[in-house]
Image (cartoon, rainbow, N blue to C red; front, side, top):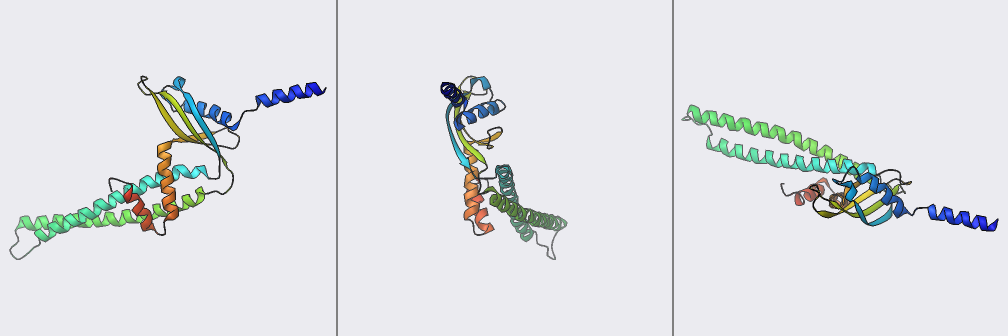
Length: 219
């Protein structure tokens, strides 16, 4: 009887997968929908860490960050348009000797300034709302309790043309039982982490906007 129990225990032990093995099995299935040539997939390394975050906030934070960048770009454009319109108004400023053409040009510049000012107010209000949403989601991101597993996974697969094998690295977030997961390319998630740190360190909205200015080449 003891021998039978020992054999059964060995069988059960051999069937138990490690967290890394569970993660790789789940990731392989997930990547079928992501890779150009899933059959070429070759795992290289997998690191599993406990996570204490609300993963449902990741996508909203990324989307809000993109919206903030877009709004800041629009605000910059409005400010340039106002400055340009004011310069034109100075040039075509009406006097007792103004021609019909100069009066028309002044009126056009004045209208452009008013439109830009209206848009500036609108975009500034939208930006304020997005900054509030960003801070709220970042606060929720830091859950403080075990929520699943963060998996850093490196692999190789064929490119879109199927001609070159290229390395890839992604960060996956798996539930506690390794039944579902979602992932992001490592570079994209690294940018996300930088945003989190910037918001955590910020003491004002100006600090957050300065971060986006410094990390957005088009602003």
